[in-house]
Length: 298
Image (cartoon, rainbow, N blue to C red; front, side, top):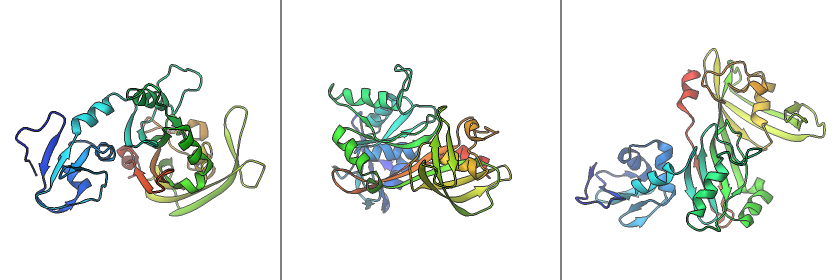
């Protein structure tokens, strides 16, 4: 692969395709950034093929096609944001990749940097009246895909039709111990106490029904890596259910963990598939789990 532009603009790099392939693998070779960062560049519409902007990761490329990548613009946007990067944005929604340690929105300290405050500042640079709206939350120490609305109407559409709008929510968890079953399903009813801890009950006690399905990806003697799919989205659902089966999420002292080998909570929101509230098109957003999750479970 070679740069075919003698004098590229300061904001762009132009490449000529040397072999037939799809767009995302081409970009991963061309741009010296992480897979998530490259996906963000593509999702923001900062890639053009033969002069036409595209966000289609599986777009077919032919020999001789010209691919223009606005890498400097993407880097500038991400450098202005603390603790997150933008995976996708249009007039209705913003999808981010949140880092562990960043609150979704402020609770007590209104001055604390949060995903909400960072995105609010970002959208107001274009227009001071612009706003963002929380659609769902991730715990402070949980990283991964998170969805925001850009209008109150879109927020209401998503939340009022949550089960239809959200097709899949996938997580990866690093948990304590060696999980024996290859797959499993956990069904219980969850209630929160006055001390903000959620408890699980195997029968209906008036709490919220919660369903978590898991698949074992790999395991060592000390830790297991699980792929999790939520059928319901209750507060602390995964953390409570992992404690219930005797395999708490690493780093989760609140819900039974006694180890913290990766110096963070071992939970990552890896996948979100939604039906767009305005276009009704299906979108899937994927954030690669931290490599430390894999290393500790080998």
